[in-house]
Length: 500
Image (cartoon, rainbow, N blue to C red):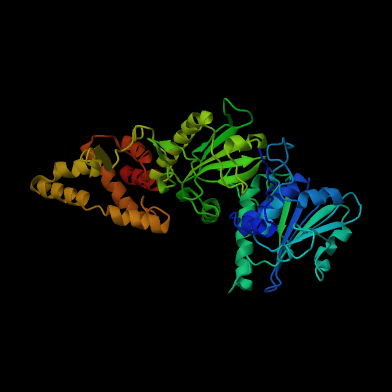
């Protein structure tokens, strides 16, 4: 059987690798991974605007590399992705440095120093591929002429590495201006704050990360420890695997958050895009949001408003990359079939809780849908083969009291209730919710106290006069009934009125 040697054409291969799909933020996160794997405690990223001469530099204080190690690191596919990795290693394919860099720049220069030794420097330049005789894959020694000063800070360091991107043809495109570089820096900062938040946070952070001399502050997707959270579960170990753990979270409804907390909790992608599983490897975030293809009846769960408060932390070891189908970009993951049932159960429970919190604006009711000793809800959902409809409860205390006293007006009142039920602007509410990324305001939000008190007084009188409750029982029932349970001072005013 004949065998042929068919090496890839260098220029075509490298240009193809540029199209893997990196964004600037994800590409820079890949380089930070390399720094962490090299035991760096501090990483500084600088984005410099200089029109077509703009550049990006990543400097770390890690172990550094000698000449042979740097050459291996600059070679494509230098490591076998099937090989066992150190527990701290965030890489897998031996491509990240090169593919991430080439996705944004045509020139990649890496300089490094190990333990006070000599500085070594190697450089790829895609514009020079194929121009060096006898070297199809030319790896140049030293920085490009005129770029030496951009690596000079390594002279003052005992050990560390500097990665330099030049010829930023995928970043500085036609029309790109200084203001665009500022916006890019903001997007990069948000992504890094999310991706490395568990390494950046805590009283003794494992990593310090700076972007243009400003410290990157971690973004916690879970509002850990917030008193308004409906769920912050223990950490569960997933059976039939090693080192996979899960913690389920349901965030507070935004009505229970301050304005600054609302904006922070929404995250870089907004509330709906940030819901779902957060997959980590070595505490580094790989996947932010989404339901990993889990669902019911063969249909994956979508990201929707009703479940946007659900966020589930999922940790996997780096030895499980193949099982979870982690890709080169570290942006996709798929759970092994044997684990899907466990993850589905935990996710279903978390989604159910999140839906109830969302529906009741942070005030969870029991599964039955009612609160013990509370006034019945004014609206009732009815499900049938034709779909779901919503009806005003005729046995609601205030409604029943009015109907009992209506006399000849009772048919007209019933007709009015029916008209309201049949003309609820469902489509308008749905569109407004989708466009505003928030449910319409209800529960007397922003209403003055006198308006709330008018409704409270009417229901109070219905409970006392029509239902025969004592004033104390009526006040107790109202104090357990949303949204009046947020207006206890007004219920006390009813008490003062009753006592006069």
